[in-house]
Length: 469
Ligand SMILES: [Zn+2]
Ligand SMILES: [Zn+2]
Image (tube, rainbow, N blue to C red):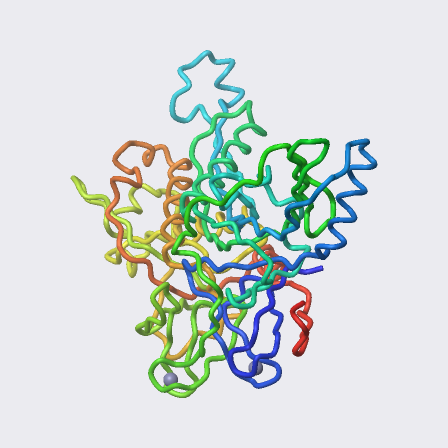
């Protein structure tokens, strides 16, 4: 079982299957390369029910009988409802602290230097209701979403008898709730420790419609509503309440998947498809583009670090603190990050100081943060290069998310340096700039394993013109 999305090829109409979250794809039948996703876009997907209305009725009747409940004397409604859930994937990052054992016995002021800080990092996959009124008592997805194929149907492809419950909650509000729930959970699991700060980055977000069969009618003189999970075929809810009526409007920022031609905006040559990458180079005119929420943005010359090892893409964001003395160059920061010798080299002294974060996905969440810390501490030198750097690892983190990650990474770095703990060096007091992509050579076995594990997925099966129903 894999998490896949099925959609129709805009070129030939074949039903294609691709891993969920795929950025671009080539049709196996007509060779058309399509762009399927871009940062910040929330796309609707549907699960196809594993049961039809007649079967659902039989299961519902059997359920009532087994439960010793009176059966329906009359049925007013047998219907398919689609209930929305947002799904988020990302990196959950938390910093916890505890008083060091030595400090406890010394009866000292639990001041700076007396606390031990620890990092909790994990890849998460969270779902929260998309409708504010949680219809039919359904507050969570009953199944692991990745166990079932989702269909990126256009509105016209929906089953005719289906009622789609409007996802009236805005995606960012739902996202905030998912993060809060996650942070509460981490704090609860580590209740003996102090919760310092947390963040979530690299989110991919989608809206999943879950199928429910609803039967409503009269039973023993009263209203009765029986609700069936359309995938597991189990009764999940019975109620004497009347049928709920959808309120609210679907949020405009959620849209149907609309595959579009994936080609160089300058010369029209097809880009090579990539499951994860947000960066595309044109083999024809040598330009390099970054996929942004608004479309393709040309990158000026890509910046590449020197040295042995495979290239990995990183975002870097300039960071400075004004005041006396100002901290805005590598030389300036080397006075605080004292044990980090690489900062002291003369060639770097007058360069701007950057916070680095991985732009690639890694299954080893903790190592992602360690890499951010390592690069920020070493401030690698980069040179402009021609064409797309030959990187085995796709740049998949959107620039907007790189800012969240950089803020966490800086926070985390501050915990290691007593002289960075003061208010002066808080992120909110920093002067930051736009993130830029750089490719850095690294030889690191743990990183390599982490990246490979993040990319490994079963090969998608391809189906041609399979009937939708
Ligand atoms: Zn095609
Ligand atoms: Zn081109």
